[in-house]
Length: 329
Image 1 (cartoon, rainbow, N blue to C red):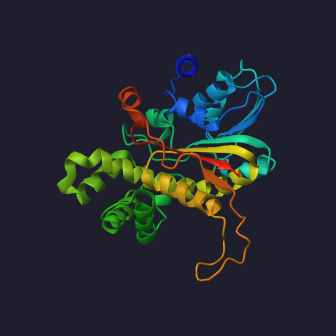
Image 2: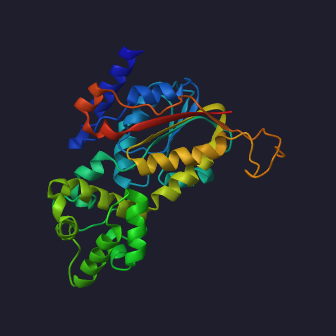
Image 3: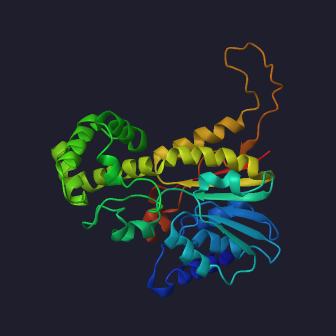
């Protein structure tokens, strides 16, 4: 098993440098494959296709009778991953929509496993022209799909300080959220005739946290994270998609979710917990009146799976990852 996983990992990495485009190695690849408990003729969904690293590995576990669905609204990722998986055995179906559309794309009780690798892909961060990073001075965008919604800078020019502060707390657990939001709104209003740039954001963050200059990059990352998650409606989409995933899974099917920060992980854990309860009666009721047979998910692992120190040493993106595995009952 270990040798097989290593072969898949190496093959995925090799495929990832085609045409001069590089997507980083998928995080906890072996653990994801084990969590999915893949059947060669099964039907699976990778809800966060990205560069196709996890999908490529799943596809190599499937026979010609298997089916792999994949979701991604990033047109660059879809084009790259489709080419990457073109020679694999199973039927490969791409859904170029957000994974929140899962219930509209996949029939109920039809999947043997579903994988989520949440957050932003390394390629999106590394490509500064996408406006996902505070490195360089490209205009803020932060949309997963630049064809829809409003960009981060459009949002910053219309949001209130109260709503921005709430987003900073909700999506990044930010300290001094209201002071920071007030100055960000003031900055956005003061800039006329040009785009808001990462350097503008950095100036504001430094003014609010003058005592934490050594931590500025980490603070900027959290600010960008909070705004990105709000622009893309990420927490709401996670909740909606996991609820839909429960309906789409067959009994015995696996739900595998990897998150990279506490806000995402809390959302996953709390959403899944809704389906782990057998009794759904109000807490104040002295006895169960619902029948106590409503459980639809059970944990495969009591605690989240964490990356090994060896993986973190070669792939820094794995540093904060947590993997949760559930089974449909």
